[in-house]
Length: 271
Ligand code: MG
Ligand code: MG
Image (cartoon, rainbow, N blue to C red; front, side):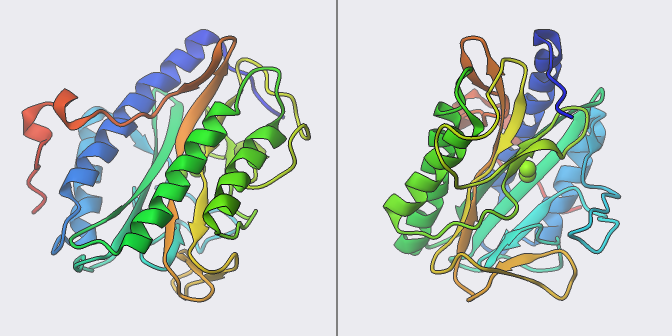
């Protein structure tokens, strides 16, 4: 069943989305060469606790993972693309990091992710990240009331193909609201004009992820981390989006650096 949200409920999801955007922006600033993944995890745990938010990941035990998950972030490095387990690892020069987070505030969930290269970037990695970001914006732009879910999927897939990347339709976007994963599934490729009609009140996470040279994945022995099958690099971009009568509303935009308080410019991460 798909639960449609009232404008008031979308407003409550937007409150959560604002916090998720702010915290991801902080983590984007903190991520750097030499920073340990557990520093990012502990920074996020502290901020989530301070805000009175609840991690949607903690204790999550889905069929696709070796649950329960006991972290608040998914941190996926290089060939890892989804569900990366935070671990004792210091980021190296040129590492490609994907950060994914979902929390609830007062029972309403928002979910968002970004990828970034720390240190000296390989242009090929920046292009891969750009492709997921362009695909995300294309998917959002296609999420108009009256259009079909397949239009969103097709818009994402079209960008992947234009950039020359393959697409897996496993682990795409999803409905969300009172819980993190709800119907409908939002595949990262599809046919325009197909699928359910997008109505005002539908809230979905749109999340393109691509691997540089394969559309196949493999599961790491840790029971969670999903990697490209061929070891090539990967990237992932995600926003929570509400369909409104006037068009898509992105609930998890990250604030620009200028719009953020100074004390979040470069937070201390040693805990
Ligand atoms: Mg996510
Ligand atoms: Mg998601």
